[in-house]
Image 1 (cartoon, helix red, strand yellow):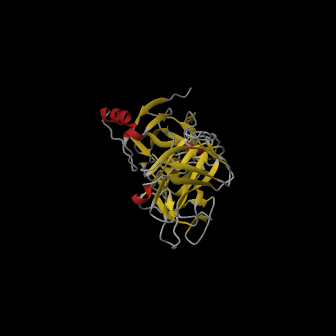
Image 2: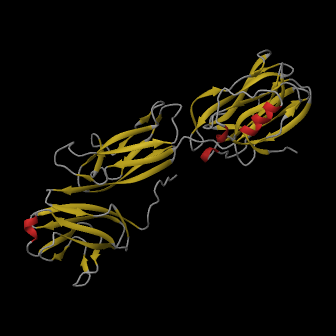
Image 3: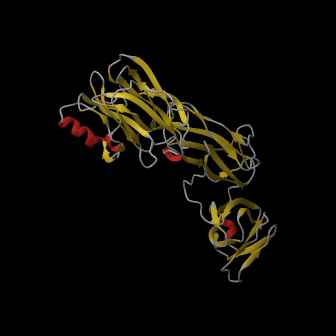
Length: 415
């Protein structure tokens, strides 16, 4: 029966030091990032301990080396993994254990797969090696344990060992064992992979002011990935309403490239084209992030209208209107609320009772003499984009509010 020990790499290395041997890894990974599940090892007790480790953002996708009657030497083959299990960029190799004699072999998994187990034959040394490959699924885990590759490395001596499979749908991340003139013993270390994925989408500023002068007012969409990619990757961005906000050139979509240098992010310019609401969505390998972009219209600087960017259906939210021309506040004045859209709204708590403003109509809120503004609440009856136009004398401001059935958690990723 195969055994598994839940150990961290630091414990393994400490044991190796106490035994008077040195654990080496070409792709050094801090011990705190390696919460590994080790399979059993096959073979004898001779040789010097080794670990050949992939990085925390990589899966072990093959084993290559040299073999004759025994496995003379080997190293792991690693690749960065996207959140959906696809490979990113080219494969890289780990440190080498053993010696470079015999006939070269290469046991590499198909694209989109990773090593899920090994078996073979062993005595005092590893006589024969076979590799099992499972399909990678979401979040750096195995979707299946798959099948063994048809190729075999080594001879026919020794006794059969394995299969030594990774547990809990974790892919292999490293090779470990002992080596001298040959590979004396061999096992796997398995763990979920820290995958390349969308980590954030920010829109700034929100809301953004519409300007009749092209280019005078713009917003920026910034996409951040969880890791620096090992190969250039394209992220798809979409504006749900390109008549409200579009990427440079009036485009509804854009596909910027995130390069293998920098901080793993890319930024694009958005042009506000009219007042209203648009949703900006970034998508990569089947997952997406969405943020709202609201465009308001402010024809002058004599009126301040504050409203939240988002609200919940049927729940009151605060708004405020303030005049910036002190001379206009000596007498009582009126705020006209124009409802542009096909969604009813109301103003509760007024001295005259609730003010109902049907779709496409206006309602008035009276402000007493001597006051430069008023704060009150609005309730919107259905989900959608509500554009509210505030008119005070010759001054007017238009602000949109995105009304939802329920709050959208920050950082929500959809697949």
